Length: 121
Image (tube, rainbow, N blue to C red; front, side):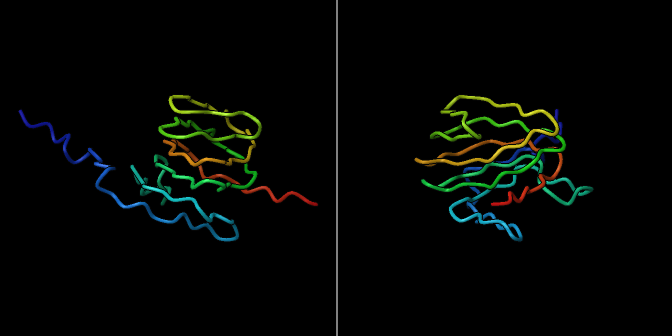
């Protein structure tokens, strides 16, 4: 019995890592693989991110919340350290920065686009 499930399978190991590029955001050392693309939102809500050692993503808000699973390495969400096998749910409206000192690979589900928060110095 054919179910058509094959068209929904993503073979992420066969995909190349692409540099993450966002207007006005320093994303050096961060790479992504889009796992699912939402045509209505014109964005990928499910994706993998790879942080090279020392890479970071700035302080931002999650209007729709977020789910993260650590596949490799270790990462900090604000002061909270996560390592391989750890899961993080951030509720809607939660704000944080992300950094990895040793590098990591993370699985994300982010239902709504994040909002970068520019902190005044």
